Image (cartoon, rainbow, N blue to C red):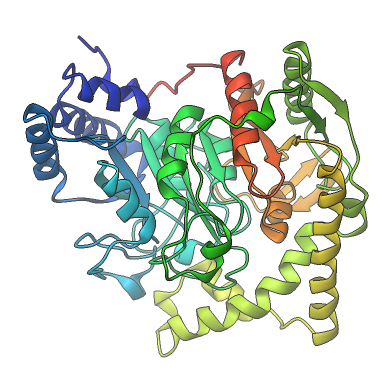
Length: 469
């Protein structure tokens, strides 16, 4: 008998369902009960999928009839409310899209369903998926399950909060600069932003700037990330970027049967980093070294020459403003929340600065290419600080005052360059909040960082910790 179904990860749930130790109906109902019990405090869920229980009964019938089962058969999942779901509201955190009902699933949703997973609910986000805190005029503000006075992050903050609080074992988020890795760090779960193009963005809005957007899995275990990613990756015939991303499988890679070389970096290059976060990065590096991995502290000169956050800002403003302007055309001011107004009011980047930023992005790619010619992976911070209080706009870190956009300092380089990264917990702050590290791999080398993350997970000093709600 399973005492706490909502504490079991997706891989285990699938195995328990396959072996008839649990029924999909039991699993889905347990998560619906958990939502009913705790979401009033957390406000992570914006819409329940009406067909979840019918899908669970159908999945149970398949098990009992001995029909072929997918790798996630009967496992519930949630999806950020910018990701289209057929017959389930996708309202993008804005009154402008209130009542919007897609007729088709996003590719990522369709692929999880194709693996047997059951859509349970949609989760909260900032307006238009654009900010580091999940708050909007339509569904309000999400809270962090570890401390309700703090944010679970953005833009996939509702998703991170739902998984951390046991309302969902597996989810889909999107990432423009921070948005699956930062929220995972603030709530102590795991997430993967794969190489750009690995997972099609078809059925997700906004798409501009297309070169920076990603969709990826969020979960409570590394093996869940690996299994979900294996279902999600590959071309779909609609997203041109995905044509170059290729298929990912969980098959053993014999090229990894050797000692891996890993660098670790806290500063410089990412902006100021809190000492507790820095210590957690060092602890993860030391743990891998003790496990037989070749580890050394490094510097990446390209990150010091071109601050990736500045590069990102100069490029994305020019590409994202038209998308926001089109969506908000003719709308009343009271229908727009903070970030849509902020984006539309930003000055255009000059053509000279835009071209220089494009060149800087290429220099950053070259710098990482040089690094990965010598190393297999890189360990960095995810965020410069643990989860912060709601509404904070400025931070003092190591005596330096920075604005809230600096929370993206260590994550946005991977969006500018398209590199894959995993966010996973490896520490706890003095206030009892999760601290995650980021594992970065070379392009298309998700298997390498998943392997390293699995090693770290096995020896993690915080394995199994959950918020007490």
